[in-house]
Amino acid sequence: MNENAHTHLTKPHKSYSELIDILISRGMIVPDIERAKRKISQIGYYRLSGFWYPCRKFKVDRNCDNVKHPVTNEQIRDDCFQENVNFNDIISLYLFDKNLRLLMLDAIERIEIQIRSIIAHEIGYHDPLGYLNKDFIKPEKCNSWQDRNGIQRNIWEEWKARHDKQISRSCEDCIVWHKKKSKPLPFWVVVEAWDFGTVSIYFNILQKKYQNRIANRLNINNSKILTSWLKEINTLRNRCAHHTRIWNQEFNHPLPTLDDPYFIDLNLDEIARKRMFGLICVLWFLVKKIGPSSNWIESVAKTLDRKPAIDSCPKTAMGFPNNKGNMLKDLFL
Image 1 (cartoon, rainbow, N blue to C red):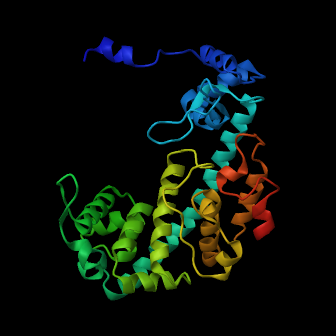
Image 2: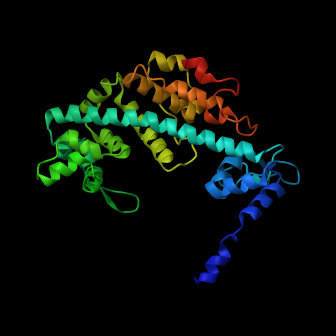
Image 3: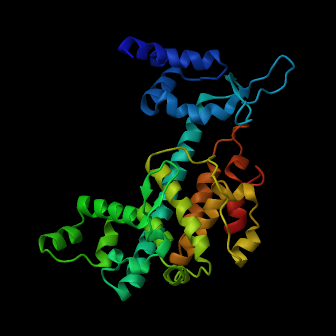
């Protein structure tokens, strides 16, 4: 395909003024044109479109019935906006999401460092180079298998390759020093190079008895649940690290909860456990175990107070049961 053919397939380039004109023609209220152009130049039209997407009308047929996608069965959005959608509110929603991401990263950092430290201590006790020893790993994770595409896979070998890559590119002083001295890297040193995904996968492939010891350090009596939590927290961490919208995201699987008074009192339904409200509750459970004096949840509640009141972007999209008040304050403060 030649260059002209590629160009023909893409949407035409628009100036900032033209993009604002499109929004206004579709029914968005833009109180300050110059500010709107500035914000689009700073953030990007496409990135902001994810925040105003819920504000678009649903497409209807000649019978005024909502049109649904033939494959997903989801309602299809029209280009035009609902009533009273204000560009300034969209920017406020964007800033709310940004502040929420920063708070999620704050909690995730504490959890990641704590889990790394516990793993290094519990496995390093048995073998300072235990991260190289498959005796700590579930046997089935060390066996090769063929995926649906006919590719040979081996989870243990793949994890080791990921680990090696992170060690090779690490600039941590402790790792550099060991390399220069040609000294073997003990467990409590190598974990400094691990990202959350490496931590999550390693915990998942550990033998059950080691998983239990690590989980028990956090007063969690079900390592399978901790495995699920780490997987979802890692997904959240990646979204936050790449500045991707999180406030109304839905997870693929509902978060499991412990048979614990904390979760029993919360009584989270499936909707909550598939959205940010449920994940905030899980993060707060872990953060409280790590730092009992933490005021993290107070900061999250204050941020929730600053969420703009947009009819088509309700708090229920975060997994809250209703749009009244501030449920985080009611539950935790």
